[in-house]
Image 1 (cartoon, rainbow, N blue to C red):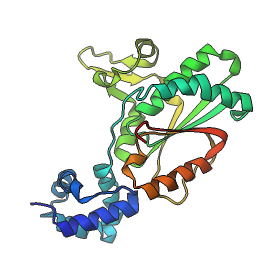
Image 2 (cartoon, one colour):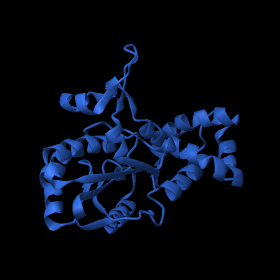
Image 3 (cartoon, rainbow, N blue to C red):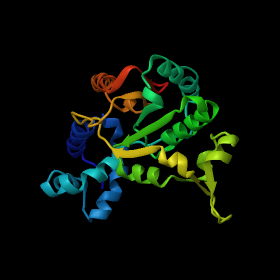
Length: 257
């Protein structure tokens, strides 16, 4: 059972229109593999039947979340591209405080495309360290973390990770901000309560006309996300991000972008 070119074109066009993700013909095998589980779950006998279901009123209502989870890529790490966090604390935050953008110590940071939570929780650790080193500033960070995938948002909200995932976390941060399982045979950790409380998670589709954010942000992290969009969509997204930044705010993109 394989994905017919006509069905691939229907799916790729729909994915681009709804999610902004380009799906060239070279991704046929990948899409085929990722949707195979959905065919089994729905007891469908082929990709043509899947398309018929997806484009039906019932399918649009019930299947969109599963399609989104299947086609989005969620590679992330704690302390990924660490120079960004150094720049944030050594340059960006002092500048924001100097020009008064971070009003009365409130610092609003948006992790856009947060995946399974490693980036916003890294921010929570870094900002906790900064606050500890500069108690006189009375800094009150508020981190908004959004993603289009409900599956990864559920992981992020649980804030539980296998010990293999925390290798990039510096030893001092591990001791302060990660809680080990009481079961010594269970190699998992959980983000400490204070750092979890700094992060609010929500679902957001970059293709939505309005992001629905109530406040402008001091800093936006959107790293290694827009590489999956075409140039026109990238430019449109960057303009939208800038509209959600306070004057003097910072937009962090990934090194590959």
